[in-house]
Each structure stands twice: as C-alpha cells, then as structure tokens.
Amino acid sequence: MDAFARFAFFTIARDAGVSAFAAGILMIAYSFNPPLALVLGASVAMFFAGVMLFRALMLSEDRVVSTEPWQVMEPEQRPVGDDGRAVACERLETMLLGAAKNAAGIASVMFGLGLLTSWA
Image (tube, rainbow, N blue to C red; front, side):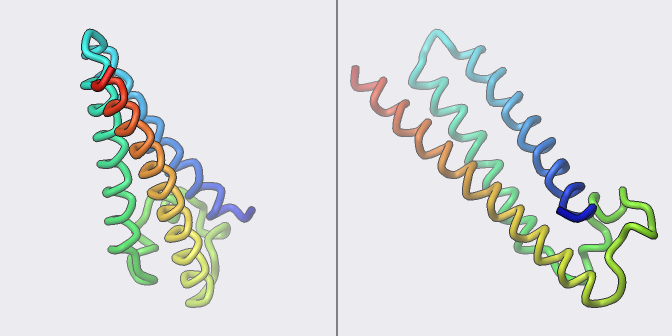
C-alpha cells in the first residue's frame, strides 16, 4: 500500500470511528427502547454511507489535490503528474465506495434487528 492509500485509509477509518462513536452515544441514550436505539444507530450508519457516496461522487482528478490525504502528505510523497493524480483519485474513490458499502450493510442489519426486536 502506497503512502496516499495509507493516508486515505486512516482518514476514512477516523471518519467511521467518529460516526460509530456518535451512533454508540445515541444508542446508549435510547437503550430503554432497543428497537429505537437500533434504528437510530442504523440511521447514523446510513447517513455515513450517504456522505461517503457524496464524497465519491464529487471527487475528480482536479479535486483530489484538495482532499485531506493529499494535503497531509509531504510534497515529495505525493503521486507525481497527471497519472499520479488519476491513480490517487481512483484509489480514494474505491476506498470511499467500499466504506459506503460496508456502512450500508451494517445499517441494513441494524434496521433488520430493530424491526425484529419491535415484533418481540
């Protein structure tokens, strides 16, 4: 894994961690009603998936230079030239879409569990 992919991974992982923390706080706050707590957690996960999809949609080869992973890197570590920007854009887009897919899967499971626990 090259430096840009590593920085991109940890940036997305940090964002996912903050979202999971927010979902956890909401779920604990509404723990008196487990179906509602699960639906709130699922809603946060679905919102995170939507944000990741929006970030991937708005990403372009020109905009990749204004992303956090690109700006955190030292200039000599950054991918060089137009081809380097294209590869960086493709990698970041793939990682964003992967995070969105995982978040949507987690949200689906949580919505399902919320529905099942509401029937019990």
